Image (cartoon, rainbow, N blue to C red; front, side, top):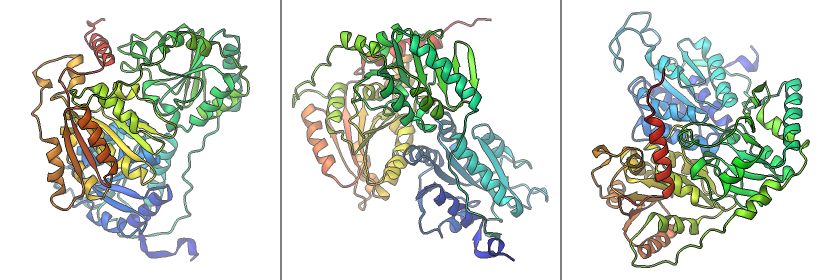
Length: 567
């Protein structure tokens, strides 16, 4: 028997899966234990270069995997059958919406139970064991169930290749009695995303788009969120440099184009755009959107003025121009090829410079002044560096985040397509872990969101992570208030700063404080920066204190939601 197929007593599905995860760049995986995955965890723990991160519940573990995938490009989470997996569905659906390759691994029933017609625990009480598989099949790029040892290599490889190639979550279920069975060693996988365009379609798309842009009087570029997932950020930058056009970002692409770039004009977000940005983009006679998502949130309730006759839409696998679609054209290749055909034209940027008004300088700090969202935003702005990463929760933090100028090298994350309130705490755990010591994570999180997933602060403390959390306490769901108010938007107040001491339990290194004035916040930030562990600053503000952009956006989204039925 050749060396390749000799059985290794230490190689089984569990240890081989751990090898595969380490091969694709993971150093950690998230889990909540349950009896169907315990043997699997035993085997994965044998890998010396993978660390298990125990989470408080499966939903939070899923959010943590989301955050880790943002930092590292891929992540993994291990749960038990049904009671664990189904608890995580919301987080995985969010990862699917946000193009994040999260590898969901679930322990499954004994491989004999189906054939022997057994009724098992952690099920819904019937003899069909496929409910979890069927649900995950709807929110993953690939779902596989390993019930026979002979299928292990093929199914594991198929799932992981789908995650890397499609930039989406995948689901792997492994019968609990198979994880320790020896399997032959396989040829090492090369799991790297590689796509090639149809050369005929690529050439045609480049010719058509270059022709339109080079004829335009005032063309512009807009960066969309899919640039990152499909590895086209550098290609877009190359096109921007070559073109000399004005360059804007869509709100969910913040951080994907340098805000210090000489052609940057701000965030294009319809009526809540950066000052002067919408006027320039919407008045152009041609604009290329690279990797956009046009939904009711990004279009401000379908009210933004994107003219499809002017629009060139570049998606990960196609280009659309004036109703003509060019399939099998991949964004990264297309943008690189297009850059070589573009004639420089600075007219849109010159137009922006003519109308652009310099932003007001930060207000002088007034030590005893009550804390406001503007004061919080300005003080957060002051501490951001190239060693920072800013993560903002769904809510008014979105709009405060857009007003913050990112220094070169500062990362930025939020979940706009899915917009799950509560995402940020779990995501911060995974994000901070994935960043390692390279950057310090800073988060803006509202009190309502925090209450959904607060437990994971204890996990951050447990593993010695050092994010700084600005907990915005206005006693309610402000974003929901501005869309549609009611008593359901009120919440029970907590002692958020005191909660950190609960999680420390006498052994952790979390630090916290509560502030109500501008001077108090400045002092707290200094202490937080000097602290070596997690820091939480509870910021008390007025319930009705929010950005004007949230008011405008909320009213338009509410109007879109309340449109009367049309046949």
